[in-house]
Image (cartoon, rainbow, N blue to C red; front, side, top):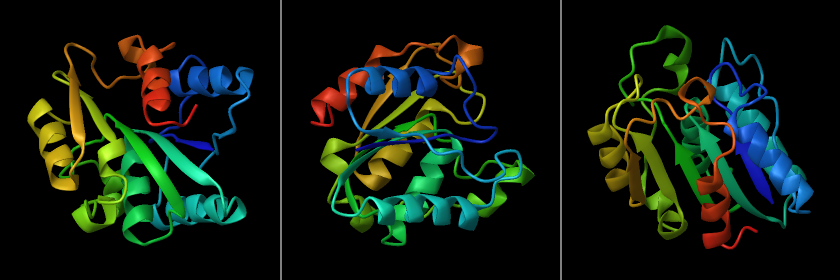
Length: 183
């Protein structure tokens, strides 16, 4: 099962995460894209609790997480707390700087980025960022990946890899899901 985790403000129509959900549903791939509580006033405990409940409801299922922005840190906390169930792999797209100074997301920071927690899925996980993201620098994406033991891909000029940056359909996400055996 693929679990798509949105970031701050959610992922509205036209976002690559919505496109990905629709593509997976059309192909018959089990996918869930939950609306996390209060996306404009996110709370780490509420988001992690909602994800943990979803994982518990689908116990016995191998989970692959596709996260964007703040959703990356929600998953990181879920994993660190040992509540990610049978997490098989994770795609972390445009995680914000672990040191971001933006009050609405402070309950998520700093993220644990625990290499022992990531070790079972690190080889099948990927951090993707851009060299001109307004919420983190390319060096930060590389440092995040190195800290948790995953690979990292930097896309030149891709901004925050969202609708504003022109990311609706995004085949890279489908290709990555295939590469980790989630499709």
